[in-house]
Structures are given as structure tokens and as C-alpha cells.
Image (tube, rainbow, N blue to C red):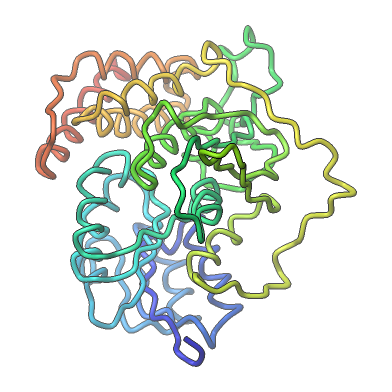
Length: 367
């Protein structure tokens, strides 16, 4: 609606997605009103953001209103969930139950509790606007479509080690894993991209966002990161969304939908420089984390929550040089194997599984 500013609450404002969201807000002050900012530990940056945007509400970790209170505030129209891990789950549900629009950049929310979140969204008539580039691409391909999806194809860059011989992966370092060839992201997501755990979580997200079974969600390696994802329909037609690998594009679309805003700061594709749009199949032997994600997502219950939390612990220990790159899938498989899953879990069951998985994974790393 022309002339009406969207009142936005940004949870996780000091992270990578949060900072880029504020770049978009700065470009469109006549359309976006940042009314709430919430961060974890970076007080200095949060203070700078408060000075720049003058929100009515600001919160740092335990200081100030809770994330759930911010997400349900009558001052807010749209809640951007840019936190990481399980901290995004309760505020997402709070926003949905309050009838707010939700722009979701937190993978773990749907990995841990996809059935619960999407049921609440359906019950409340709330659309979840995906911020991940891959899910934004699928969402954009679905605009105006009523036909059944035959297949979703998620593209993966292959991460920092896509061209490294498999026998050399055992000795890679965190610093090497953080050198992503096409995307600029936070450290957790960048490590997950190197072993395709990030893509595995996106497979689980896609299952819930678009109500498509796992056997109709395919992953292919696309080193150029120009095709962000594709949707095949039952008549064989295929739609793809293309763009430069710049997270500001899907962030902006989540904020602007159903409109598209002109933004001169986001570069356009120059097809004379793109070269090949090659895609290739996934080698599951090379990427065991992706295989685990498919299996865990299909099994359901509390297992995806365990996978998500165990991965969070594993990546933290890898970043700190405490375990090796190949230890990540070993830790995940061992933790999943020890878990006694609950089917059709409640939120309490999910948080109980979260706590169990964290303790179990830490013990594995410390042994």
C-alpha cells in the first residue's frame, strides 16, 4: 500500500542477515520503519544501530523485553527472524499467534519444529516469507501458480572445498572452510556450506515451507550461484529464479512482497560474464552430512532438533580447532544414534531434545 510504512521488528540485528536487512531499510526509509531491534551480545553495534534508526524498542540478550514480547508487540507489522539456533523458535510462534507477518531467516526454526510452526501459520492465516536465497527462489517461482509441484531443485555452490580432492578433506582447517567462493555469510552457515549440512537443513525447510515430500526435493551443485533454485511442475515445465549471489536481494523481496523495489545498490547479472550455468549431481559419499539430513528429516519427530543442535555444537568446536572436519558427521551420526526420538513432539519435547543433544554432543567433543 503506497504511503504506508511497514513497521519492522528485527531480531538478530547484529548478525550477518540483520546487518544486511538494515542496509535495505536505510535505502527505503519511506517504506520501512524499524521499530524494534534485538541482539545477542554485541552491545556496541546494537547501540550504533539504535542511534541510526531510533527504534521504539531495543533489547540486548536478557536486558529489555524478551524476543517473544517484541515479536507480539502491537507496534510491529512484520517480524524478521534473523537469530540463529533455537532462540528463533518461540518468537516465531509468538509473532504467528499475534497475526504478524514473518520473514524467516533462521533455518533451525523449521528444522526443529516445522510441523508445529506451519500448523500455527495455517491456523492463523499467516504467510511465512522465506529469506534464504534458495527458499526465496522457490517462493518467487510459485507466485501465481496453482499447479502441483512435481519437483524442487535446490542448488548448492559446493562450499569452500568443492574442488578439493576427497582425500585432502580430513586435514582442512576452519580458516580454509570460511573462504566461501561466492557468498558472504556468517561463520556457522559458511562451515555448514562446506559440508552441505546447510543444504540438508534447507531440504528440511523446503519440505515444510512448500509441503513437498523429501523424495521430490533434489539438490544439485551449481558453482556459479546464479540459479538459486528451480521448481518443476507436473506438466514438465521448469521455473528458475536467477540473480547475483547477494543476500540483500531475498531479504529485500521478503520486505517488499508483493511489490518489487528498485535498488541501485544490488548488482544485476551480466550474462556476458556469467559463462556456464552448469549443474551437477551430488556425491553423497563426499557429503555425508547431507545424507544424514535427508534421513533425519524423513524420520521426523525430535530427530531433526537433535541434528540441528548437535551440528551447532560440532561447528563451534571445529571453529575453535577442537575437532576435525570429518569429526562433524561422526558426531552427528553418533548423537542421532543415541537419541530415543519422540513422534509428533510438543514444543516442550523439542526443547528437551535440544538440551539432551547439546549435552551429549559436548560430551562427545570433550572425550
